[in-house]
Amino acid sequence: MERVMHDKLLAVVEEYERLSRAMATVEVASNPDSYRRHAKAQAEIANLVSCFRQYEINSRRLAEAEQILREEDDPELLQMAEAEKHDLAGSLEQLEADLKLLLLPKDPNDAKNTIVEIRAGTGGEEAALFAADLFRMYSRYSEIQGWRIETLNSNTTGLGGFKEIIFKVTGHNVYSQLKYEAGVHRVQRVPQTEAQGRIHTSAVTVAILPEAEEVDVQIDQNDLQIDVYRSSGPGGQSVNTTDSAVRVTHVPTGLVVTCQDEKSQLKNKVKAISILRARLLARKMEEEASQRSAERKSQVGSGDRSQRIRTYNFPQNRLTDHRINLTLYQLDGIMEGELQPVVDALVTADRAARLTHV
Image 1: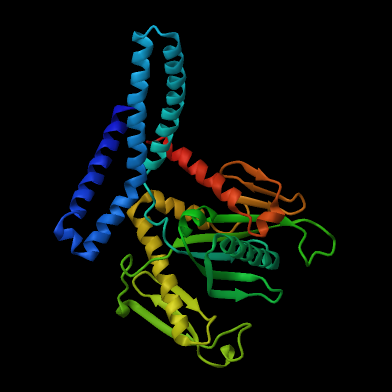
Image 2 (image 1 turned 30 degrees about the vertical axis):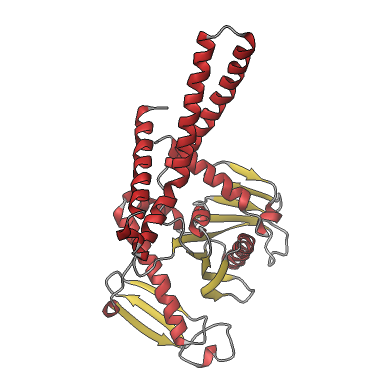
């Protein structure tokens, strides 16, 4: 193991032990909030410490086995030492790989709930229909994961597609799994409206925003301009007869969010501000790092079919993720929510790329 990595691990162990000592003091133990903070901080590095301690134990055992091989003459003892050396060398190699993964800096947003924005791009009605298909795919995937979906705003078309749909996904580590879905998704298939049976190409944009809490983004109510108006499009019995739709404008940034799915003006306002807060957090992240700014631009793009991260080819039952050159001939299952093989491949590729910098 490299010296720099070893020193990093020793520092983590020292921090773990410091937290243990602090939690044993009356000052921390008698303060529930302080104790909870210390326990959370310790839990976040517990696996790393446990893995490193096992690495140290195995390193000592390997040194002992090598000493026996150098100094002993007993054939049976030498055979046992050689076998143990072989096993320990493999174990240490795996433990070091695990430690490198555990040392990777965690995305502070990984545990957050997520707001997903799907918009039809190039392709007209067919793009809107595919936006609805993607919404269904993510809904099924969320159901498999045990997550909950809540629609925040939608703009439907006559054939049941979505010009736009915004929804929140709530559950365990949602953003860590969904963040790789951000970008332009291209679909190749024969549209329902195509009489000649020709394959069309359309595009849909997907933006993935970590849900922002008040502690992340504070909004001054004086900075908001709130307008109410009558909802349009399909809706409940009273949706189109009352001024329940809400448009929230954040004056300092010019960001505008509209919500009209609920019959209640108050519920629409709450949802609009939730979306606004997420977009403000995304903007804040962009401003803090130019890399995130570039990432956000690549997420959304212009909706043009040429700016794609993924292609869904229905005639061939094929999904291709162009970022990692992944091709799967199981599109039918993926569209039913069996997205995990794609997510796992993207997570693995991301880790591999980041490991080169450890």
